[in-house]
Length: 100
Image 1 (cartoon, rainbow, N blue to C red):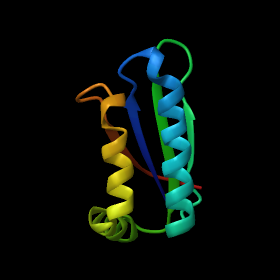
Image 2: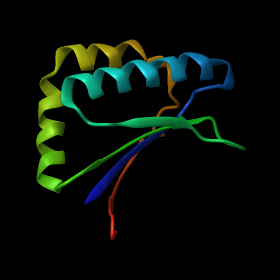
Image 3: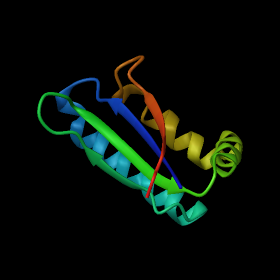
């Protein structure tokens, strides 16, 4: 079992509400369209970061999803709409091999 996590820093704290609305919208879309059971949240304390994460059975399935998302026009429109919310260069993806 693997976990994919994406995190990104909000450009400024005033955009946090819009960033969380985007997180909700994109999570709802991906869960309905691809049955991911993705969750999201906001980092506490000193960083204005949004996190998304979901579990998957194999790295191949995750890679296949990535290729599918590149072609998903509705998903890409959501990303484009929210582009100004994020601090440039702050996006970070992590894959974790879950032991149990």
